[in-house]
Image 1 (cartoon, rainbow, N blue to C red):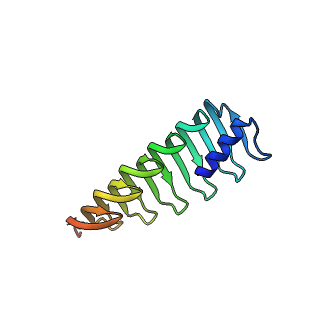
Image 2: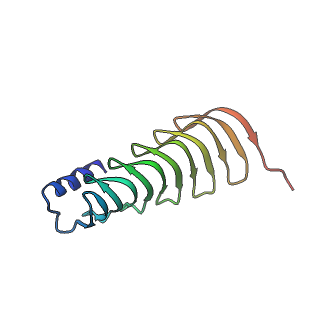
Image 3: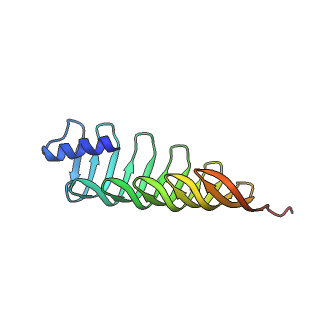
Amino acid sequence: MKIKLLIFAAALVFAGVSASAQCKGKCRNGKGVYTFDDGEVYDGTFVEGKFHGKGTYIYKSGAKYVGEFKDGKRDGKGTYSYPTGDIYTGDFVAGKPEGKGVYTFATGDRYEGEFKGGKRHGQGVYIFSTGTKQTGIFENGILIEEISIERPKKK
């Protein structure tokens, strides 16, 4: 994404875009839609040619981010939908999940808790699709200390 932003900034500086990349609206300062050569699309606010404020970015992989941007990166509250069907909703810092969030897997499993650098990190609850809840401390995406486990009551 950094390379795309550099290319985008260069296009703005030289007041020209390539044959297939295009901007509709105010892509320097204001609201606009920028379509990249590869078909990826950003629809949102721009400040000095960078994504800044609320917006939507659709990736060629099928992934989609809806939320806040700062200086061209996902930053603030947002939702990232992966092409696999997984969804993360929560805080982003410098493009990655960081802070509080909920990661819902396409399988039905869910993690609610703290993230750092895009991974489960800190206290959280992993809720399996079976209903079992595992509360613990996570580090770099791995459960390092189980605090409690709660299984659903059998009927």
